[in-house]
Image (cartoon, rainbow, N blue to C red; front, side, top):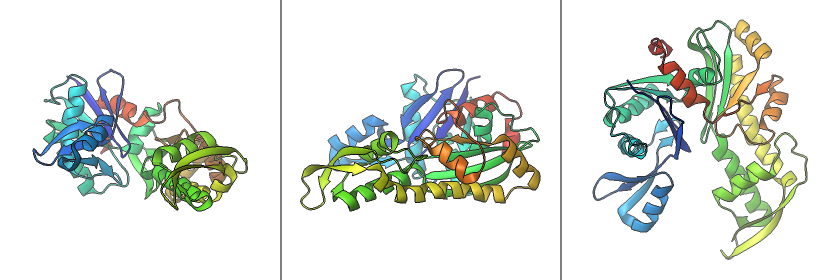
Length: 326
């Protein structure tokens, strides 16, 4: 029997089929309004929406840990399976990550979308439990394991012990909020409007969150706020740092809230063992060091922080006791 592991995020969707490598596709779908079907996914979805104009609408799959449109997600999953040469889930097992900030209704919507895509049985697993397994920790052990997941639009933190989420916290923000901070700072200081892509390049390549005082300079291109023409400006990383660090501090606040909700022994476990930093924002330069200094706890960065959840799901799916984690 084939095992499917599924992590649907706001930025990208990860699918692992059995022991095969993880397939990563942007969480975008082009939906044909006349025919009522998903016609393209990932990068091709954007091209399709631009070419077909008003006939097709571009959808992002997730919003705050919940499916934005379950029927769109279902069509996306069907198309995703086709890209790996599979006709459908059939009667095979699907294990899906459930965001800590999602409500019971949100989780039911996710499961309904997976079932509509052909699954006969889908088991949801909290993201932080999957994350613990993905960094080679045993979620069923007594000692607490803490994960801090910085996603595209949601930040979630959780402490796992005895196979359960013993404490958790979540909040809106993540990489999207960090990009928005960069865009607003550039607009205010240089009077140009930059794209999300340029903002992310600045964030990933120019900013060292752990050393916000560095005066790195870079030339960026955008559109003039005055006349809309293409123009450029030289910006300083030091000028971008103050508003950016406010968003980073909100990430730290999610972790702090989670720790405050835990029992004393679990807090001791976290202090001794540290926190795993995961998700799409984990690799941002200096973020782990900044959080470690802010939280006064070691913050550890695994080798593949973006894939830890789906890899953890795959490991849990092979256990006959996977149902105990929900």
